[in-house]
Length: 305
Image: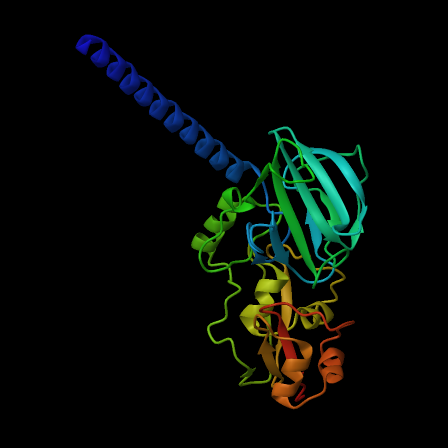
């Protein structure tokens, strides 16, 4: 009897040990594969993450990336467009199935540039960022699913497992892997989204200078670095889009305009009240077509030219 008990205990311990080994192997395999995706996949848009996976009592099954109107959305990897249509909730939305065994979702687009059945390449433009469907503010809602998307989203994964971001938000460059973007930040000192003083500021001088675009730079980052609205940069440099290139020369006018960096929770109306100006004047001077603003956007409050 005693020998039988010892045998049973031995079998139990062996089974437990085997299970631990299998679990460790699977975990290591999953971690390795995620790291491989970090090297292979690219960010879908230049912007700042404003909401993460699992918020809203666990119902938010993706991440939200805020970016200026007109920003291009790209496919994170090669694949096949499985759906491209207008949804009451997602708005204009594109689904892409990837050979790695995942499906990605790009929602709230202003415009779709691909159709169902299209084969797309990594970094290919598939749409324009928007505010369609059930959405508040211009942003991309991005989802990652193991296998295929389902209505209940039971296979949804946190995209940050692939697109890992540092603790302080930085510009993520579409068409670049997350790892490459982080290397750019370390090696080339790409301007970050976080201003040192998130308060109103007055430029000290009225000057014009040329800056040279470096690898990893975006108009958004340059806008924040110089406390100048993106629309002003585009106007001064005759740019029709937000696309800029390494070694490109940009003119920057340092003026005495009073500017403000938008904070989370701000609205056009709250900013106007704080500075005793009208919402319409803020919209006019910043060439805004509506009241939509996003955190860390630079706004001119008063023109002092």
